[in-house]
Amino acid sequence: MADFGEPLTLVPVETSVAADRTNGTSNERTYGTAKHTETDPSNHKFDPDFTKNVINTTGPKASPRIRKVIASLIQHVHDFARENEITVDEWMAGVEMINSAGRMSTDRRNEGQLLCDVIGLESLVDEITYKLSTSASDAPTSTAILGPFWRKDAPRRKMGSTIVHGIDDGDHTFMHGKVTDYLTGDPIEGAELDVWHTAPNGLYEQQDEKQVDFNLRGRFTTGRDGKYSFYCLRPTSYPIPDDGPAGKLLQLLDRHPMRPAHIHFIVSAPNYKPIITQIFDRRDKHITDDAVFAVKDSLVVDFLPRKGDPKAGFELPYDFKMASYEEAQKDSLAGTTEESASYGAGVRHG
Image (cartoon, one colour):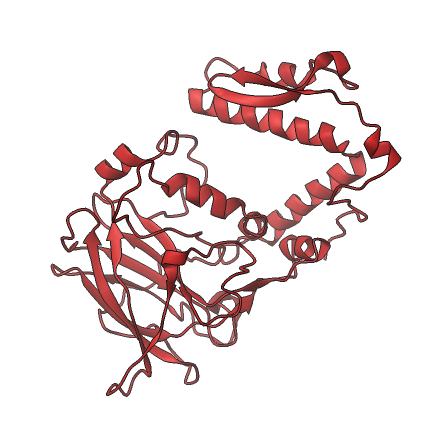
């Protein structure tokens, strides 16, 4: 494991040096339409014009969204460094943590994304992106984070078939439901459900050489009635990988790595905004302290006993409600539909 330059102070420490910091009083400055907090230059112990000069180097060809977002990022990062008086050693420890995440990441594991998950950033961005500005009485299905173990091009499977291969133990489950328009209630034909979850040993197939490729994964497409069904396993709780920088950060913060049992979904359909979400088992003891902060009340479900089916001892009925692009555009929070960058376009969001 990489050395991240310990000791790294991650919580405020009451010391005479800390108490004597005089970075100045807080003021707000606006760049474009974004407000930023900075210190009063008259009381500033550091160069009061440095951050402004960095922001002002942005050229005229930068898009308005890029100009706004990067200016805000620079301001907040610089303010963070000043407020905490980050040292070169601490900065290098942070750089090495990011670099280590990059070295570990492959098409089967996204350690950078996992690092964002454990500080709650992906869950926050998910809420910002998919939050409707109006309070609808019957809202679309809630979203949750994609997570670092989604794989592109999972096999298409026949409706009603199983995603379980080579695993005899575990609680076999028949999951079924309907995909509908959240406003009209009409069934959605041609909706694709991309599903994946861990094995009973808590490992996704790309983490476990004993599992067949793309095990416990599949894509199913609805017909005219909008219905779907397949066999899976009742999921199990598991620890996120702790052999990289995300795990190291959890150790530094004295936090556990456990995720409650869940099943991942990406639900997409022509002319509808995709739903990236997770369904959580109510029985799980970690349902209230997910290591990546992804649980939402509306996504917590009960697995029911199933009788008369030799393939499954449980069933899980669950309906997905989708918003059309038109409705999503109309009701989304300001900024969430703006184009920022094409980087990361290879990760499908539908």
